[in-house]
Image (tube, rainbow, N blue to C red):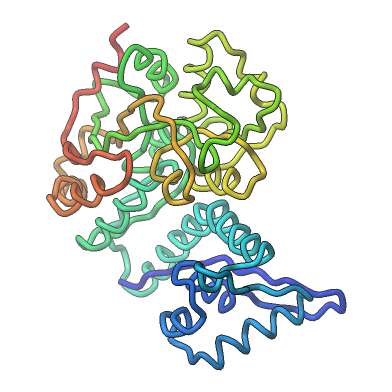
Length: 356
């Protein structure tokens, strides 16, 4: 089975309009940042020192600013411009990856229909996240072809009700807010027709810059006028959860949405905070750790995959459930900061969602 990948690229033009494609430069800068040495970075990137040095000098000349410099005791470090280029690239990837992955999946299915005819495809609709991405990889490795469509939790369960997917991802907080959160999904889920597969437990919390310079201690601080907050998009399960948490504290969600800024993934929220464009965000711990942010735990939740109960015994769904329940996949999930994959693949009764 062929795999289609689409990755974002971007170009910077200098004052004369001369274009500069950045992939090679960004990879080299990342290696310099991690290794503290141009020669070690060149080796890591599979290029000669002369080529790496020439690349840095070429771009420094085009930008009119040095990209690296030596610091006693620290080796070679990135300049502020180089740091900003790296953060911009990470933000681009965080924001565009869900859209590009969905498009790649769609193109992959179209090509597969031409090459291998009516192959069985598992249609998965879910919000873009670390456990879901790991699941797609695991399913592919188990020979299950996945057509992934990234949408918010509300849109995902609505798609399941319309028959547009086989599995729909959504998540619920553990504890007293579970019932209120579940009410958001009840219009589309029927305990007599649908079933749940447990994907993972995960921790949601507050993202702040390293060292927490603004002194954020909890969700109530989000109402502070000196804090710039970046939210998730409307309809996302994380935004639903956050608004329930704020209401429980007596905080009007409109107060924290002064800027109107919203991102579509946990990683994009983390990148926004890491770039200094916001002081605080809310999302899963893995995103915070990957962008070297501090994380303040707030609430644990469960991520589910809903499906029609009638299809659970079909070969396609049995294969998917077996892949989820495998020891290898559970270990992958548990290795993600804030995640617990011990129950992945377990089937659950849907009736608990309808308990008042």
